[in-house]
Image 1: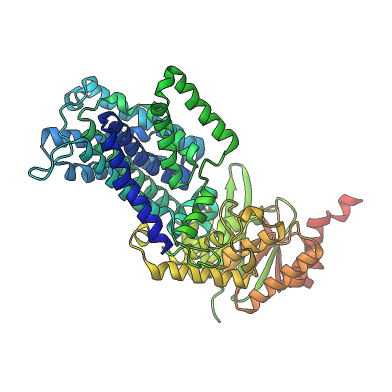
Image 2 (image 1 turned 180 degrees about the horizontal axis):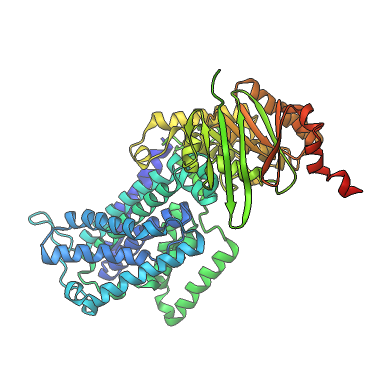
Length: 329
Length: 255
């Protein structure tokens, strides 16, 4: 009961109230801001699965985001595929790339894994930039068809908003199922102590690869959404700085916390927009918010422990509701 | 005559120039309580790490219930039925006691993203039940919702054993279970471990607390400098001159 009510409130807010407000305010600009936040929420939620829950700090997420964006853009401009095909295919292609590129790094832990993924991200960025014959290099790809269906609806701000919102909601559902379940416990065990997890019968390498593949899949989907909603992409959108931004969002929101990842994206992208009236000072405020939130809430605004118990309490995901123990999924 | 549950044959492990375990052979019979003792650096924990697949043998074989486990990885050995605890407590501090123990149940029952994605109720129910029953067995029901980081040292010992028990192992390997416990706690732990043994679990343990070992174990293997130097009942090994020499030094040296 509580669970359905909580979900209903969230749905009404995302699919009725927010688009309603945006339509009344009537700004294409604010639509652009919210769709950007939505795309980044998909990125932070997916990076959080691998960096927060499984504990493999990735610094190359923007590279995989780029693979998804270019896959979708090339399929849509070259082969005229519609968005409902390019989105899942971009995800699948990115996941395959992710698995292939990450296989040799799966034995690495901590800072070594972070540096290896940093290298991967740079390789992807430089490939997009220099393989001019295929990616058009620094000129980027323009005139990417928008989110539209012949005879049903044409590309519009509202269409973009709903496409991003629905995809983000599906992402949250899938990643929530993975993180808020016994499978999530297995991933957290890998993070806490991988040797110990192995001696309890967990296949650590497989768990790492699976979580990386899921993260890459949704990074690819986010890239496809970005390509279709902006209509233009260039390698500059998928640089190292984007990976760092994604990581900062996760850490501010709370490593290992799915709602925290969303909150981090909303704050670090929303705040600069809200603070636009104070001009260039706004980035100082954003920096201060990051600094202070880490100083006073090192576990993030919505820390993992409290989020896991919130999921058990508010969303009824506990096996034993009276004692709030275990998972039902 | 049935085959032993664990059969270590000429196990050798070399780390560079150091021969950590040198031609070690020994068996553990079903239902037995066996102690592995020896001075610091004798290679006891290395033997445990070889059994549980932490690193490969340089030469030799280890058979578990007639299956050669020498080449297996840790998780495969665990799934076959060998669970262990660690010398330095290794609980997962940011997980609750319940979630810690669920890791053992996950190892035994298995895990896959599909089970979580397609809402496999029966699977989750199985893991939850097994976890809860193990918590009751280890007397940790009241702490089930606490973060492991908040438990007392003594309780963490039980948590580590409970997590291993959730695997439903046939062989439980304990690495210094009594370390850091006071006399009362050690006696309680001894009773608990004896109870597990009476329920049919086979035990192999490393321990420095001699009273604990001599009291609990039916048979004791003694190691020194990577080799097995004695194997027998507690009475036999405690009066064995070779063992006394390894622990105390020889009379000539003392003189």
